Amino acid sequence: MTLRLPLALAAALILAPAVAHASPANTTEFDASVAHDDLDLTTNEGVSRLDERVRTRVRQMCQNGGRDSASVRLERDCRVSALAATAPAVRVAIANARSETVRFAERAPTPASPAATPGA
Image (cartoon, rainbow, N blue to C red; front, side, top):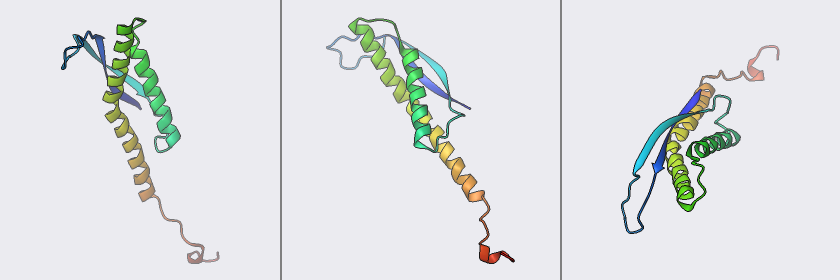
C-alpha cells in the first residue's frame, strides 16, 4: 500500500516586503507516493519511520538547487506547505491502521479458561 500525498511546489515565489497577502507567482502541484505497507503504523516506531519517509520525499521534491537567499526561502516554504498538505493523509493512514487492529482484536475468539476445559 502506498500513501498518496499531495505536495504543493512553488516554482517561483517573489514577495515584496510591503505585500501583506502575497500568493505564489507560479505554483505547480503534484502528487507523490510514499510506501508504508511494510510499516506497522500502530506503533510509535512505525509512525516515526513513515514521518521520516514523508520528510525525505518532501525534501527531494522541494529541492531547487539554489543557494541564494531567495532559493533557500523558496525551498523552506515549499517544505513547510508540503508537510502541512500531507498531514491529513498521514493521520488517515495511521487511523486506518489502528482501526484495523481494533477490528481484528474485536473479532478474535476469547480463549477458554482452563477451568472450563474438561480434563485440564
